[in-house]
Amino acid sequence: MDQTPAELPEIVRIGRQVIIELIDAEGQREQLALDVVPDDAADFTEGFLGVSTPLAKAIMGLPAGSVIPYRMADIVEVHVLAVTPGERAPTADAAAARNAATQEAVDRANLEDAVRLALTVNVKWGGYDPEPLEPADD
Image (cartoon, rainbow, N blue to C red):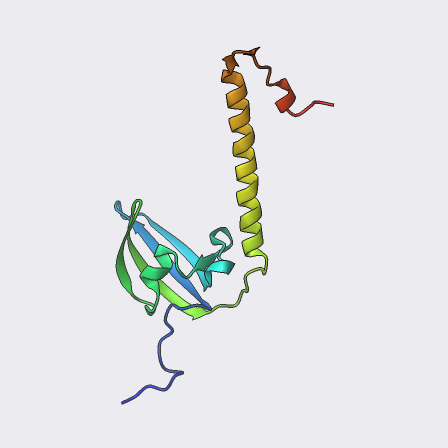
C-alpha cells in the first residue's frame, strides 16, 4: 500500500528544521535545533546549518528517529529527534557578516604580527620603537 505525500515522514533536507541530540563518548547529551540551509546562508551560531558541513552530510535524507554513528571531536553518535518544516529564514547578509568577521580577524592578526615583529627587531638600524603601532590614548 502506497503512502500519500502527506503520510510520508519528513526527512532532513534544505528548508527543514531538525532537532538532533549529539552524544559524546561518556554518554553526555546535547540537544540542538538547526535549520538546514544552503551554504551561503549558513550561520551555525544562529542555528543555520550549511548543507555541505560534515554534520549536515551525516544526517541528510534521514527521518526522525534515526540514530547514526558520527565521529567528530568527542561526539560519537547523533540522534535525529524531529524534522519539521523550517519556519525561520536566514538573514540575507549571512555571507557578508561572515566575510566581515573574517576580515576583522585577519586585520587583528596582521596588527599583532606587526607589533611582534617590531618588538623583536634589533638590526642594523638599532632597536625599533613599536609605540607608533599602538592606538593613541587621547
